[in-house]
Length: 198
Image 1 (tube, rainbow, N blue to C red):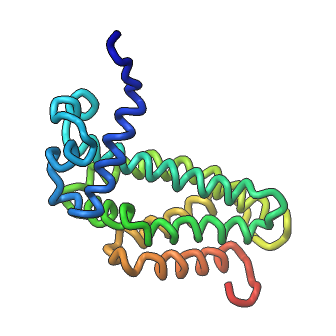
Image 2: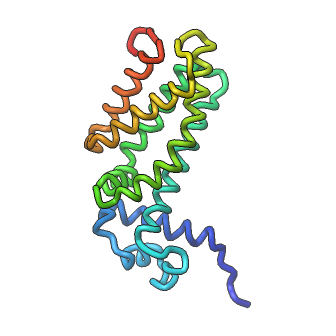
Image 3: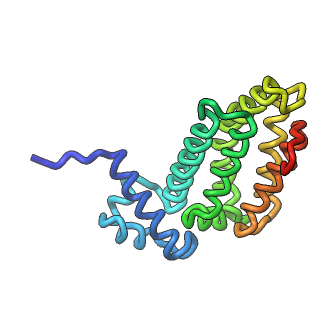
């Protein structure tokens, strides 16, 4: 009886292998041959799941974005947390990914001018998922009396735009944690938060 292959699981296995090789060799220096060798599959098998190397890069990016969104959602959904604690939790999740080896390698690769379409594809998934989360933090902060804004949705755009600008302005990957910290500190003050150390 032929073995039944779980297509989703096999695709994930190949993407996980690609992620490991990207860290070891760098995205630009990784070939499809390197990926299939790491995954333990035939090259033809790779092409059953991915049309090109860029497709597997995007699968890794999508998985990473999903983990980031899940981490941010967990921070925002933390019951009993104040708006500021949730805001700082979001910051901490973003900063953690800036020291993750796969995330750093992919960020470096995606910020190259020739890879702008890959970056834009990730942003198209990531930013819309974050807007309602950030808006809910702002609404909560207004209700708690620690934020002073009239339009929570516009405030969410402002905060996320600042974070994205830090990324798109050419900030070196090694400097991103400090940039995220600076942007979130400035954003808290812009939202009306006046506690010491913000």
